[in-house]
Length: 286
Image (tube, rainbow, N blue to C red; front, side, top):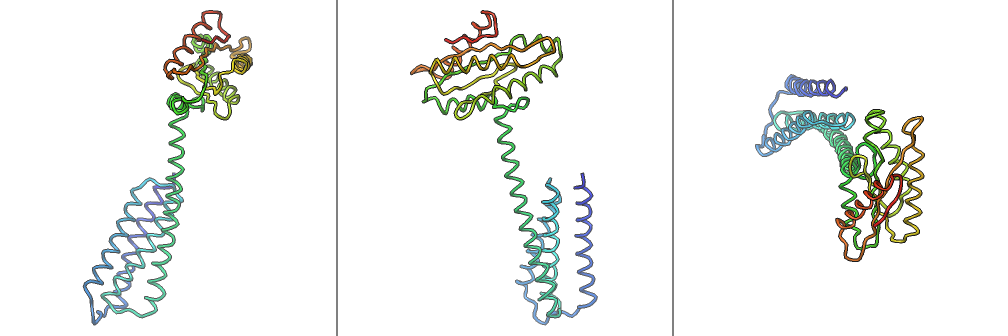
């Protein structure tokens, strides 16, 4: 919100600073140096132009206000020191300017710019972390998404596991009767409840619409029966409305020795249809 006026302020101050230093310097110290070395003048001029270009690039960039402030302030101070350094190559100046003013501005500018770069790298790391999280997270329910689920299972296919597919019963009628906002609320509440049941190597993900999938690192039927019954019970605690409770159907499949993920998912999907056709609100496994 405040970044545009701040950029305008820094740009004006930057231009005014250059003008004031040059005009003030020439009005006080206009005696040419006896020995002017072209290499020294050229080097200082190039250094000054580089820092000015970096300052200009910062003004064009979209940065966090704190990062922008320290980068702009540091480059502003650094440019002032380099400007004094360049004028020193051409015009005579007292030693105190070279020792105190020139070095003070340049050194402080480099330090402040360095801190600004540190902040910029922090911002970049945070943005990368956030983007990475968004790529593997379902936007609505905040659980793992379809992309992450399939990638995770493929990376763990060598281990024994089971796959469960969970589908909310009559979800279309929930949206039609109560509205999509209630449908979204149901999805989010169910996702929170189910996700809390799976820790460690197990993964709970939304793979589309009202459908969820679970990677369960066990092939023990007793464990499978216990966890699926727990999920059916949890689903029934979700209120769609004052007079209506939620129910889900679950289809499961145990990975066999030579099964691919596609084959396991296909069997789980077939088991889900069996659960739907057998009255819903139940678990079937193939």
